[in-house]
Length: 193
Image 1 (cartoon, rainbow, N blue to C red):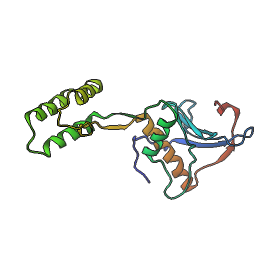
Image 2: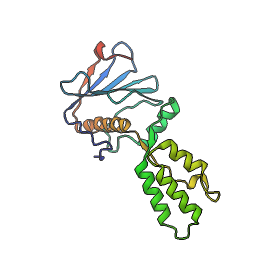
Image 3: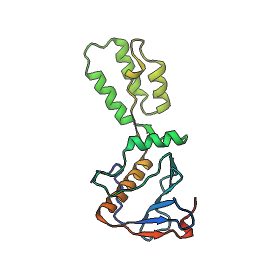
């Protein structure tokens, strides 16, 4: 089983799977905290897209999410982040200041003959790292002339809400692998499309 990206524990969440009676091709997979009306993540697949709704935001992908109990089933973060960006204006990534700080320090420490201009640039990057806009301005407007744009450390990570959604999808796949699922017809109260 894949390690959790978000640290979210779904042990006390129920899995439900619905196929609509009134329109073929719509499938809904849902994880819902037992006894709760509000804590849920719902994957609605229809006409080539997947709409994910619930407590971790609304995300639209340009591919359907069809869970599988196959051995290697689960989510490829990069693939699904690409499917968000292709279909919508949503940004699946955010600036990761800790990873960027580590990348700056590693870059600075791996070469011994930096010029004074380069060392000053490293210091200015580190001083602006807590504010993404300031960091971006410094990184790309004040870079030394001997640096290529690709040389500037700028790390991003998948947004925390999306990590939970990917973990939920993996959880559904894992439950399918061990047979912890039921198929039901969709009651109208779940069909908010």
